[in-house]
Length: 134
Length: 134
Length: 134
Length: 134
Image (cartoon, rainbow over all chains, first blue to last red; front, side, top):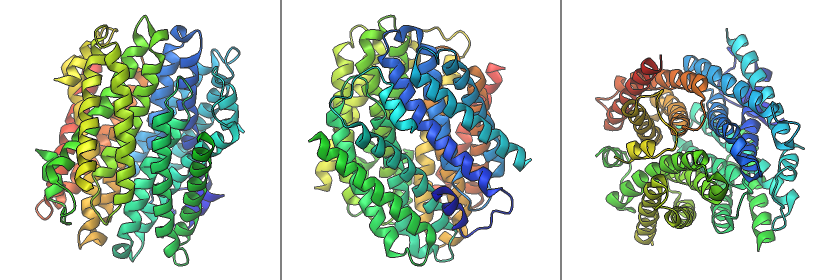
């Protein structure tokens, strides 16, 4: 898998981070960023857009934070572990908030169902990576 | 696949765009953004960093443009086809430039090999979507 | 001004680009990105959100493209002029499209008035830099 | 000033946030994002690039996190205060880390001096906004 390949081909050792957990967090954050952007736009096109305002806002916040998280996690040069931990915490909360919102109308809107799943996957990946970092 | 699911669950029809080509362009651009960020960082950690400056710069440019492209392509509300076409053209060129650079030292650095492949995939996806849009 | 300071403190000469035009394009694109994000969110909170869908979408597209443009323009290492030109073209069009949309309801929504101005400034800066590059 | 104008023209009241502190945080984060991108690139072009690796990495992390922070702070629809607080905490740490790094060679590289100042400004703006949110 190419994310794992990229991590293993980096000149620096990954002694301080589990490769599989790191790869899953990068992949989950990248997928969640795109899915949240798409969900915000799909909500915007719904007839009931006025009731979906909060969902659109949390989608967009989650997309921005996940995109930053995927980029930061993809860097292994030097060490920036303090920042990584705070960003993972923020990303975990953004994903949990967005998942709560999307799940609450997942039965009405299939895009919110898919997006809720992408958020839960990323929330879990951030939590597991945080827990492994200690 | 979730990108296709997201497109199909959007309230607006996709009459003007082929779903599979659109999904592939979104996925390829998202993957290329993360891979280019990771390649820039891996090049930075190489002993020969001074010779990899151009590769790092084209990697970072390509990452920024691919991330914007994935986000813009994920929107289907209203129509913004003029902008989409110009952005696809820019993304296609950024990917071609970065692929040329990465491929030139793919034998020495496995991360450049993986990154060159991600760039070619995205270059092709942009070209095919552009050609389908007409 | 700090953008000009940053350009002048770069180790590479800027023989191929006018410093003032480059600094203005970086500043205009950065300001436009934040303003478009804010305008999208303000439109979302309006009672007439259903009529502002197209404006929100072009705002978000413009924000993504302007952010990428500001980042790419801030790089002066090596040369990536082919990509820079295509991206400036895309940014100019995104700004023009968003300005047209925002100006059409600038009298009703002050945020659209401010955003239209930010978009016109960036559109002009991209056009002038493109014309200077040749 | 346009950031304040944008906040004041938003349909929702800003009862829970001080407008000046919010505007300063948005402006500081936006400026820091662009400055950090430019500093990373200027470091990359320095003869001593091999010694500037950590600075480039913290610059790029800081740029990504500041850009996300500026975008998230520019949204006032609904309430996403839990995520905002975690993101401000991450941004404050990213800026402090990058400022420490840049200041350590500010005498040698003018771009690191300017970047250190942009990071300190954003670090302070995040801290003050966090403290006002409580």
